[in-house]
Image: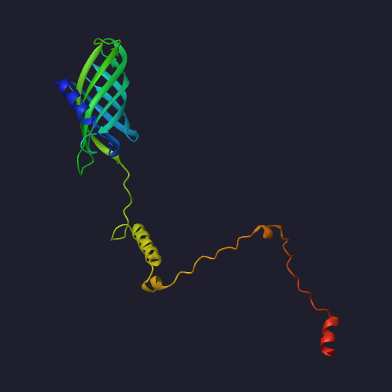
Length: 226
């Protein structure tokens, strides 16, 4: 059963792409056989979270930290995740212990409610513990404390006002660029061709522009005498 669960998760998520989560922070409880735990997840990147689990059992207390990668299955609300981490704890008979953890699970965000439901398999490798290896399965129910940021909805009742204004301006430009009926029958003026200079023109010296001489007082009185 456990093998089929692992294979099914991997096959269903192999071809999936895109953003997997619809929340930022979620916290709740985790049921794991004889142990009851508190769990909190915090998104750190687009497709990854950090999860902390504090579990209390009949003979031990432990705290686990996991880094998890999320991938979507059939949309963003259902995804699988896998991760790894470490734990520390205290066993009733032998005292403190440590170890490494791995996790593989399925997570579902309830549509319309801020609730996450997940199930997972979590193998653990202990140091200074009665059981060197342990394989546990758990069910978690979390409440979404911080949801994913949504795009601000415009108060404009007929869609996005900015997009409407942009489309209108584009239409105006297209109308201005279209030629009218009269413009079609108008003769287009041929482009003015610059006179090409021959070999003589190249060697000819260009005459400087003539400067008009300003009339002096003498010239003014001479004109009056005439």
